[in-house]
Length: 341
View 1: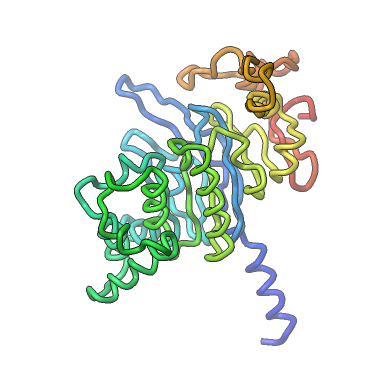
View 2 (view 1 turned 180 degrees about the vertical axis):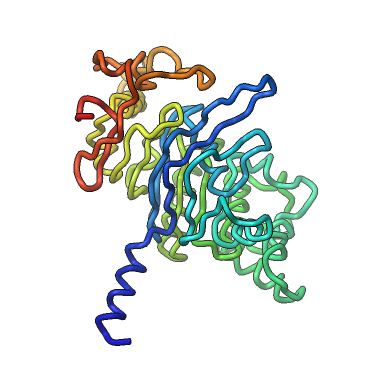
């Protein structure tokens, strides 16, 4: 193979997304026979060593997206259309045995609530070892050494104490780090974190976000950080995907989406961010803004834009058909008729 061919292959490898989601549709089937759409025509990609923020309020489809990526939808959930390509392999078409290898091995999930995700009667070191044991055939000495190495990366000054502790003996931030240890134990290419700081105090939250950034750089991880709080993504995420009612509202570079939001829903979310309440007594007494009204019920079909009934910029066309995802430039796109369609 000559030099030009090698450079071409390297370029193709670099440009190929680690994760490529194409026209993903997910529904839930109710006990009464209803089919309820949870995600509609969601498409995005993720590159190696990139952090993607998935932003939206409750019922926007964030957790459904995380579950679909790992093949962990509940029995009444179904992907009806689209592709989930991880390193070129369609996870939808993977056999149960292949899924077991992929989950934890190539893509892993950090759950939202450590007190629920961790077994209360097992030492946390054993719980990290269980992940390694499930994916690799290791003798007891190697398993112990690998487990301690993972924990040492997160608890360098107290590895042994942490390993021998039960979950109730650890703080909330320490329990969250155990979930992170489980997620990275087998060296995955991609980690999905579903509201990983929701139960943490502000100081521990900042430490956890800093840890994510360190893991990205030190281990070469790609990450999907799912949150309802835009402030968590500033300075951390490379790109942001905004979901509303299971649809993509806005998609683009984090600096662009968070600093110059174009979709009315994204702008409304950012207006709801609290100011620095320590600046003055006036600010402490200021009522925080909120998005008026409720999100649409997913069980009720929406003919036009899902945000139309709450949008201050709505036009006649907004209630008649769903807006397409319109590119503003090569990197930033928005689903809004204000920009064409």
